[in-house]
Image (cartoon, rainbow, N blue to C red):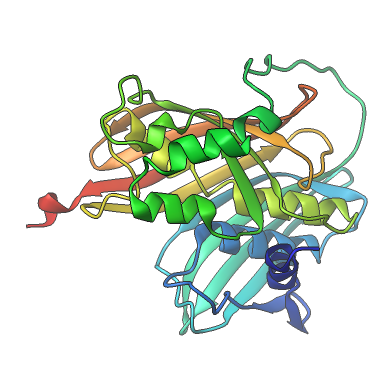
Length: 290
């Protein structure tokens, strides 16, 4: 297991303080803020600890209320909303310094058979081609230093964009409200399906906000954009492993009023649609603050 994945597993391993009360922490190396995906993943872990293991999370809905303090622990308070014959519902508040910074409502469902359909997977190059070293180097050296540093940094989730042109200023055709990227944990995860759902929830917040900026030729890397996740919704459809390649196919149907809406479909490399994500984020040009 890589050091970055070990750190992710450790971050998702919450301390149990009391029934329905958990404590999480933020990484203390190289972090200036609390990453939204971290809080989503930890809150889902807290909720999952209060639900029978045969019931897996099938949906979650979140709101980011206040910025987190990376130097302080996060307390997760779980409330039992429903315990039915087939479904279980939990509400989680993430608390720092006496007030809620984040809320999550998650629904859990025991597996059962039913009618099935799904959209087709986009036709894109496999991760081995998008991540070929010569391809990466051809694009990385043309990226601004801060963007190159982002893709070269060690992290628990490996990111392999299908098209690196998105991150190179002035490249024609880069202004599209779509973004396809292969993702996976950079090392093996435990076999517990709940860990894989929480790891994907963690990763799902990494690139959605930027998708709503792409059509405007902007990026979350721009220094004059105030970007932040406002809410986040996710649905888990089928079993999967987050340490195997998944295609995260994202699009942004609308932006306006300093907010951008993005959504994404997640597929296994053999074409199974395993999750759907939606998010609205703040994409405020800083000149509006003057």
